[in-house]
Amino acid sequence: MNSPQLSTEQLSAYLKVAATAALAAGEVLQACWGKVESIVEKGRPGDLVTEADQQAEAVILDIIRQHFPTHSILAEESGQFGELEAEYLWAIDPLDGTTNYAHQYPFSAASIGLLINGVPTVGAIYDPFHRELFCGAIGLGSTCNDQPIRVSSVDKLAQSLLVTGFAYDRRETPDNNYQEFCYLTHITQGVRRAGAASIDLAYVACGRLDGYWERGLSPWDLAAGVAIVEAAGGIVTAYDRSKFDIRSGRILATNSKLHAELSQELLHVASIKPWSWL
Ligand code: IPD
Ligand code: CA
Ligand code: CA
Image 1 (cartoon, rainbow, N blue to C red):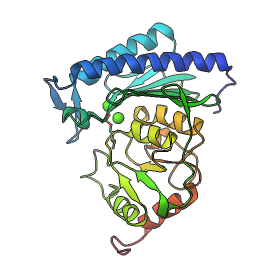
Image 2: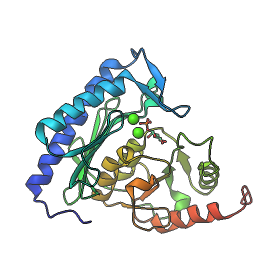
Image 3: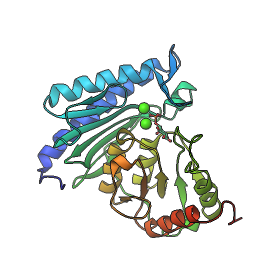
């Protein structure tokens, strides 16, 4: 489905609420920093939740519901409210980078995206440790702390800096991204694994990184960042450059200039014998 034609005023109103909620969640994350008492594994090893995740999510839900009581919500810690196929669906990750946060490694963010008819359209990501608020909406452009941002212009993988991550099911599947990580490290200027998908996307949007790929993600990891990358001039698709499907958990996001080459290399490394490229 396509997004309905929304006026600049409507989009700005959604973006303002997303940004307000992300900043409010950031205050909670700062207040709880270094003080979390409960760190629990949710299911898979390494998939953690703390009281900071829960408190930040409660603050975000309050703000979204206050402004848009009829909209559907998909929130990482409290689940689904309303239909996932609704015209308006907020996808909320109150603390993206929980492992970092639990270890007091200061690289995490609150991420709030709005899907309109299934299309990531508006996003706000707040990293309270660097005091950076990334915002974007399709048709409005993207900003970091109110300054316009754009993707980079690097057009060769050999000159690029990329980022990726490893899903919590990495011990259970050979499709764990290890081979792709090593191969792309070999043929680029580097591949980072920072531990917060939303910030990875925000950094592609502002040109600090040139491309990002990952699998095993959830809509709340991606919704805000996808809108921000696209609004900053980047491209988001599946690995093979087919249409991005937020429910697939798989994403390829680049500055657009590297898209074809990175897609080709991802497909190539998945199709060859492990380590045969060394
Ligand atoms: C995780 C982070 C990480 C990514 C994981 C995500 P969480 O989110 O975004 O970078 O590699 O797949 O689940 O659990 O910290 O909200
Ligand atoms: Ca996340
Ligand atoms: Ca989270």
